[in-house]
Length: 325
Image (cartoon, rainbow, N blue to C red):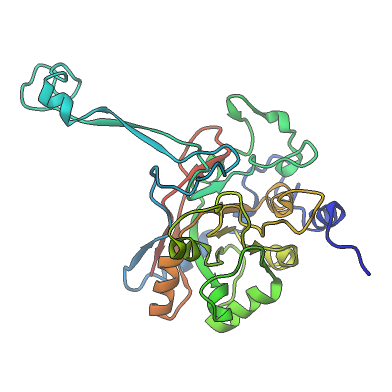
């Protein structure tokens, strides 16, 4: 018998596929370095119809956190600080929209949310392993005011390029993968073959597990946030690293298979991908509309645009991800 995956496996994969120092000791961009200007130009050539497909969830109180899950995260809270009732009551008579003008009034609102409570990017400062984040930066560089290094704004001007959907359930002929299923290297290659597409350097890769479809089929989020889920497995690490992709996103809460394959450490792929590879990871993407669009268009590549919000020192960010055909 051979031992199963463990922290030793995580350390070995991290060492083998580490990008620390690859783009300089002060690099904060990680795998987005794989994108070149000519790649953006080539991605623009994929726009032939002007069809736009949204790939994100609405930001509202119906989000995926439910039943106490989500590791302390809660669904967004949207509040009005000036609304139509204030206009009717006359309490906005001196508001900054109208001043003394008796005609013009306005409405304003505020949003309270964990930045990773919906469709979001993990910044390279999001995860630490043994006291370090990407490129060997000390964990102390993230304090109460946020990340001084590797924050999410590093990706704001670079999140555009060729997107590729890898629809694993479709390749297997099932509506969704069951919780606990670890997506393998062979699964990803099977998607490429079925879809007649090859993932390469600088691509934004979206791996559909179908968990969002399963949630909608049962009519509730259940334990989606933090519970058992299909996702990338350790076997897929060489595929991800050797393709030199720019970013990876899935339709699950945590990107990787849960329960994790390593009983002695949590979220092992976050350690390998984010901390050591400097890979930008997206989670809670709604890949159902894009899966339908790809089948209708009979092509699984498109121009992708999805920069994070420029939130200074943030370790994650919501976004509006778009696929354009």
